[in-house]
Image 1: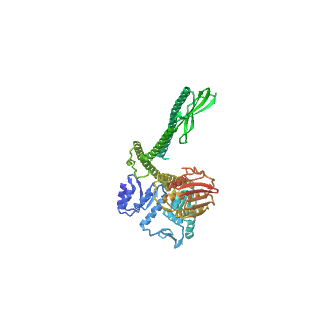
Image 2: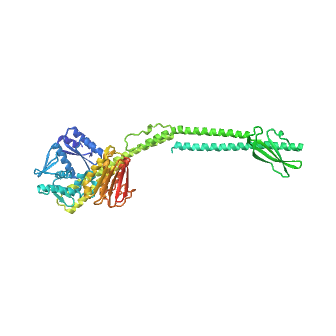
Image 3: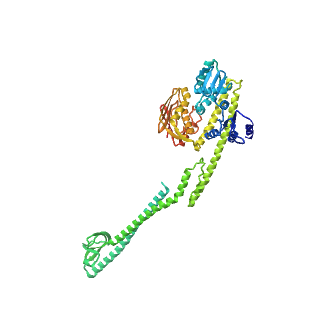
Length: 191
Length: 418
């Protein structure tokens, strides 16, 4: 906790990952200090406690997001990317990936000036893929990202295949490229 | 029945029966004694009559017996033994019939046997018995009234500290942070003071134990989640390896699913503990209709994936509960309805002011209602943990809703009665 405080006051970071269960103190106290220093960094709390009270407390202290252990690295990346975008561009920005440009505020997706109309799930999935570009993402990680808590009902995550298929087709129709590569046995890779 | 009431009833019954039997015994004893007295008087009269007859050799006239009535009846050569009987006695002045006592005997005069009957009024002793009866009844009534009022006002007062302690115990909750000071209850009786001290000790200990347990659960969960998080992130790094083949991926994917399951299990158990301890208190007014619509929408993909037809008949209904818990309740019930459904199956959701019914078709036949809500009780084909319905039921109990299961071909239905 002491070394964290030292580093925070010395350097400016884009995003801080804060584990509330630090060995030498309550992570929320650290968050209080970060805010007291007037720091602008985005803070994502990582906690083993999945309780509403803790979440509310964390967000009230000024955290930007709250992630419960255990999580997928892909999920963390997506959250960090979102927090970073919000902080760095004040939420008003265009996200560009190859030919795909996304207006994060109006949620418009354009490919070479052509409008691409996506459903909410497809849009979320596209952002998630871009945040994890070039990485293999397990099916369950995607499903958990898109459906959050109620997903435990799914005995198999095959139904996300429909959404993948639609997104892949829509992207391919406008670019002629297949961005989403199936990795047999585990999931997908966006590149 | 209340203790004071039971006590009053018992004491009234006992007092009443004792006084009742005492009255009877009095009456019998007095009758016996007075009869004896009368019989002695009558014997004297007979002796006098015998003396008179032996002396004057004639029967006495009735005038010789002032109060008593004597009759003589010739009976020839028959003999009779002296005996005493109860007979009606006609008062000579007022012609009133009263109860009387008589002696029947035999006198021999001039070779003829006479039956002599001398009767005497019992009025005097009857009157005594009546007075005693009235006194007994009055005493009984006074005793009963006294007992009733003592029990009602004094006993109730005596038990008051007990009821207060009981009320305190009923509202006792280990999760309640508000300290409840039993020691402040005013108590005079030693027994209740001991009880109060015992409750106080117990409450303090229970709270302490609970606090320890809560800390333990939280710490255990925390400690378990951290290594799980490490495994999960290492796994995510591992799958980036280009050299892995499909078989490797499949195994890694299974590990990943198991991690999911383990963390869900952990969270579900923690949630159960929290619900049991009523630790979730963010209650607010919730429009159930809107929430169900939203949930059905969230479940669209899974419903469409199984080609299930879903019909909703929803009336407006507000409940006062925690949004977080109601969310979990609906998630669990709906996910069961989808998960245990058949292809081209059906789900019906009905909501009105009194109840919420979720029905679904299923490949399974009727389930055992006594078992399905138990922890870790699950169908043979279920991939779940067997905690979903337990959590649902506990959430319902928390708000005094009633969750029940019924089966009517082809629908399994779960009903929440508000």
